[in-house]
Image 1 (tube, rainbow, N blue to C red):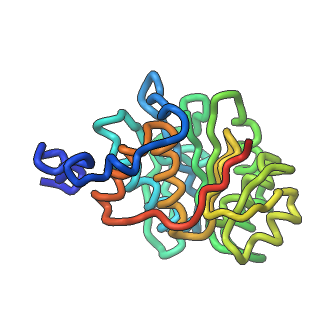
Image 2: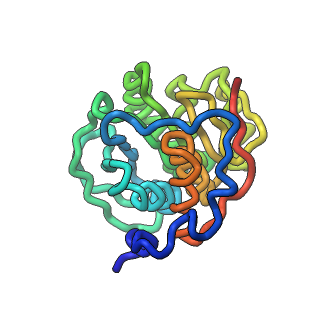
Length: 233
């Protein structure tokens, strides 16, 4: 039995563990999307593994029950991406932002010559992200991925966050950096460095499917969320 099914045996649930007592939001829990949630995670050469692996794992835990479809994409179309640590990832899905409900942009280092810096200078990915914007699309980032969103004009003048070492650059690029491990500004959701991608994904699960789904994912992963979610409005 894999770990995604481990707690679905009927003998161990969030209610049985007494976790239901913590699920008391001030307003009714949000209902699930009408169709499977389509998540496109953007890869590029030098992308940091943890930045995309964390969210992929969290969303994978709830995929069967809640209907989550995840795909890797690149702004250049199907190709093989080499990650920061030298692993090759085959990306088979074309760039198709209108077929996504969430576009997730992971980070790739910091500073001049970093993978993120190269992508900003090349310009292809920022232009593709800018053109992808539309009502109903959630754009999210982990770590220095927020710099790519800023380069695309998506984070300009909006509450956002990134790795602590990149906050000044994010501000210089027009972002309104605010405290919070995860910053939710509606259709823009950003998170801090590296492992905060886990917290971003867990927050998206709670926002879209309710606290019980997020608690379930935490139990399967044996990970407890850290930090604060800053929400606009």
